[in-house]
Length: 349
Ligand code: NAD
Ligand code: TDX
Image 1 (spheres, rainbow, N blue to C red):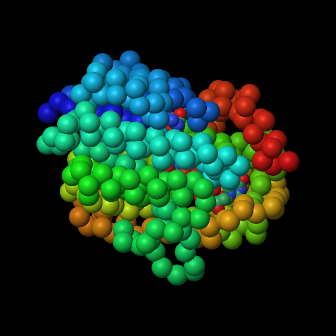
Image 2: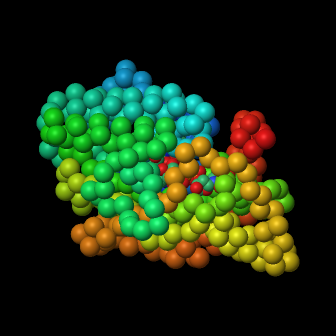
């Protein structure tokens, strides 16, 4: 079957893995990647597939109504997989407005243009919105986020993502738009921008720089390999019922401190360093404002209804990730030059 699919944010971390999966798994689909190429967007992430005949890149802003309208008219999309967003919690604390603009206004722009272009004839159409577990707020020591957990976002980032999720569901409820939403836990893997914990620490371990741990390092995250998220997105896009929500997680909880210690041990072996050498770089720094204590996802609905499960263990995924960063020195150098240095100096002064 042929389909024209718009993937937004396809030059970013998760988006690039989703684009690669759809371009390679579905040669009959046309995959249009719409990305503004902000600091987080990087076409190097897609070098290996950019020549494929079923792949097109469109440079633009999801919040630009005229541009998005012209794109929908040009391609007459059957489906949208929406990942474009401002995605870093720390940046949302210093600049909430860009999060409102892209995550809220940009999402409503896409929804409204899709509704108008599809002229309320939604047969064969699908709008799939990619969201996060952070919209559910913060857990104590017990329990898991399920699809019916009430929203309780705590950061400007998660508040903007929660707002966008509500708009997506409102378009389903009000206009009958065929939507699907998934909420995923923390991803890690190749092409992850080194402002986030794991790639930041990989880069700093390599360069023997301090490893900044917020607070006591006892906050807990549930980590999922990015390629397993892309596999879940594929399964959900093709099989979910309209109006449904799926949680996606790794069932893989780590305190930040234990995680960074483990990463240090993996890298000491790879780099031929003495056992315990890199862990000496661990440095406790001022905590993130409003730092959510724990996230943990129950993905049993996705596993039972759609048969998805992660393909790698955390140990395997982390090893693949470290190997990728060590083999892709040039990618990392390009990403950490220029603006990244300014950002790093301001964040970790
Ligand atoms: P990312 O920051 O790596 O990539 C975001 C991409 O969106 C970039 O390519 C950027 O250029 C693009 N973009 C930003 N603003 C845009 C705009 N106005 N118009 C067009 N493109 C724009 O983000 P990511 O980590 O890959 O996350 C992708 C999505 O998945 C986001 O919606 C995020 O909320 C969600 N998510 C991320 C995680 C995670 O752990 N990273 C977990 C769950 C959900
Ligand atoms: O330098 C750091 N030191 C530190 O202790 C950084 C960057 C982070 N941390 C802590 C904060 C978090 O508890 O590590 C944990 C992970 O931090 P991030 O990598 O910034 O991820 P998080 O804030 O958990 O959000 C991520 O997962 C959910 C993504 O960035 C979001 O886009 C996604 O929605």
